[in-house]
Image 1 (cartoon, chains in turn cyan, yellow):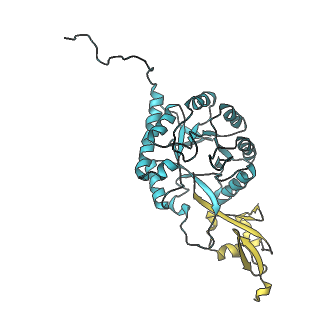
Image 2 (tube, helix red, strand yellow; image 1 turned 90 degrees about the vertical axis):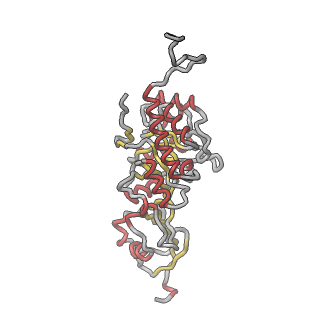
Image 3 (cartoon, helix red, strand yellow; image 1 turned 180 degrees about the vertical axis):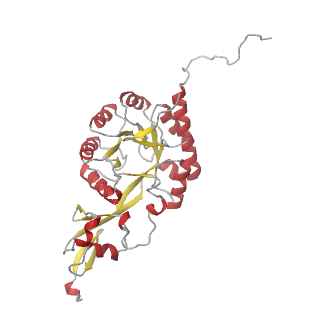
Length: 257
Length: 72
């Protein structure tokens, strides 16, 4: 089965792995991990520049936005107004319209505040943004986001940075069945097999930051995630066998001595 | 310039003193910020970077200069 192109808001991307740029030891390590991962989209955050240290290295000096798609996020925003302010600023830096919306509701579990997330999706879409939405794994809310104009649904697998892997496969499968939008697991991946499982559930992509950046060997983990996503996707497309409670011999009994 | 003539503004939460009629462009140049890598807010309004030479800063102005950092 030939795979269809990975398309978000009418733009085709080669890799189904999206990588975050936070938590790395250095910008050079981050750049190397991104290159190894094969990702062509990276998430970035908007923050104040350091005016007292003008010579401090900048992310844009290490990761060229002309070669890789920057996906500005709204990390740290707790209201629609915060999120809109942040993304307007991101757009002003260099014209980015494809954005990752993330409106949090709780500082400890970092779960998305879905009422504000929905409101933000509506407002940002009206302003011409193409909004990829970090959300919980609730199929009903996913549907409402889709109706509000989201260009991608990005449910969590588990809390951000937890590395717990996919906690609710059933809901992810239900969301997969109901939406034609790109479905991307965002948050909670811990190891390569989690990324493969996400893809085997039929997701279109996976967004990973902490699992790569905080691995003992981030570059090698970036490569592992690259293959895990490819592998999981191929497995999904190949059509798995039906699970069976009993054994089925691989070798025929015909001609047995 | 006498210190009494200077006006106070806030840049990224820090107080700064500038001479009157100092333009936003002069401020960005003084801070050595690369224009293509930043966005600027003046009193919570986003400023078109092409127009910063025409904007003269006033007493009490609050300026935010942001850029991209690593994030998930």
